[in-house]
Image 1 (cartoon, rainbow over the protein chains, first blue to last red):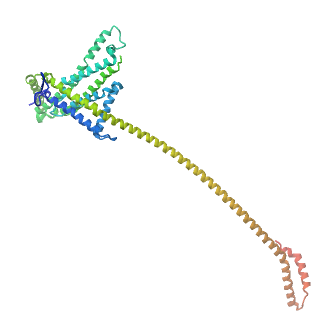
Image 2 (image 1 turned 60 degrees about the horizontal axis):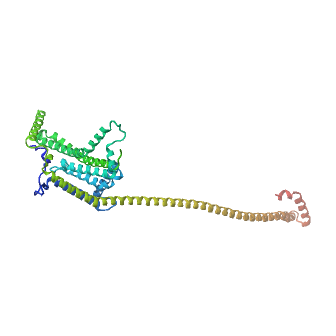
Image 3 (image 1 turned 180 degrees about the horizontal axis):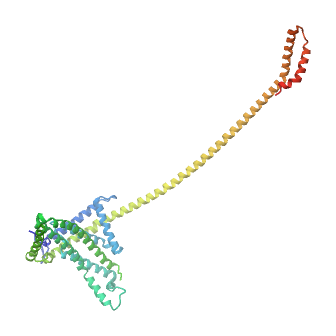
Length: 244
Length: 196
C-alpha cells in the first residue's frame, strides 16, 4: 500500500561500486540526475546558440531569454561589477532549476532535495564570496559587520548579530532549497498515497489536491532556483560593493 | 455515511503512515551519510563541467549573437532614420518643384493671356479702322448719291412730266421750261424729301 513518502529520497547505487581510497564515489541515482540535468542544459543551450540568425527560432529564443533574464537579475542586484561571475550564476541557476524541474517528473530523483548537495553549493558560494570580498577590499571587508549609524552602546551586539547572520548564510541558503524541495515532494507523495488508500470513493479529493500541488510545486521549483540565484547575487553584491 | 467512511480512511491513513515512519524508515534518507561523498564528487564533476562548457563555449556564443542582433537592429534603425531624412528632403524638393511649377504655370498663363489680349486688341483696332474706313466710304457714297439723287429725280420728273404733257395736250413742250419749274419745286420742297 501507500509507500513511505521518504523512500523517494533514497540514494542507491547504479552499477558497480567505485572507490577512491576509502571514499565511495559510486554512480548513484543522484549522480544520474545531476548528469541528466547538466546534459539537458548543455544540449538545449548548445542547440539554442548554434545558429546565428537575427530572427531566432524557439530554442534560440529560449536560450537568449534565459541569458537576458539572468543577466538582468545580476545587473539589478549586484551591479555591473558582477559581470565576470555571470557564467557561474547562470550555470548555478540553470543547474538548480533543471534539477528541480526534473524532480517534478514522476519516478525521478530530485537532486536538490538532498541537504548535502545544496549545502555544498551554498558553502562553495559562501567561501567564494568571502574570498572575493577579502580580495577586493582587504581587511576593509570586515566593515561589513559594522553597520554605520549605529549607537556605540549597541555596536558590540550588532557586530555579533551581523557575524552570526553572515556565518549562517550558507545554512539558510542550503536549507531553504532543500527543505522546500523535500517538503513539496513529501506532501505530493502523501496525497498520492491518500488517493490509493481512499480508492474510487474518496480518492478524488486528494487527487485534486495532488493536481493543484503539482502546479504549486512547479512554481516552487522555479521560484527556489530563482531565490537561490538571486541570494547568491545579493551576497556577491555585498562582497563587490561594500555599502557600510 | 460516505463522509464518515472518508474521515475514517483519512484517520487510519495517518495512523498507518505514522506506523510506517516508526518501523520502516530510520528518518530522512538525506541524513544518511553513506553516499555523501559520492554526491559531492558527482556534483563537483557535473557542475564543474557544466560551468566550464557554458562559460567557455555556449554563453559567449549567445552573447555574441545578442550583440550581433543589437548592432544589426541599431544599424537598421540608423539606416531607416537616414532614409527617412532623405525621403523628407526629397519631399521638400518635390514640394519646391511643385510650387515652382505652379508659379511658372501661373506666369505662363498670365503671359499668354496678356499676349492674347494684346493680339485681340490689335486686331480689333485694325478691324475698327477698316470698319471706320468702310463706313466713311459708304457715307461718302451715300452723300454722293444724296447729292446726285435730286438731279436724277428732277430728270425723271422732267421726262415724265413732258411725256404726260404730250399725252394730255398732245403738244411738245420745251424741256427747258419744264426743268425750270421742276427745279423750282424741288428747291422749295426737295429738302423735305431727300434729307436725312
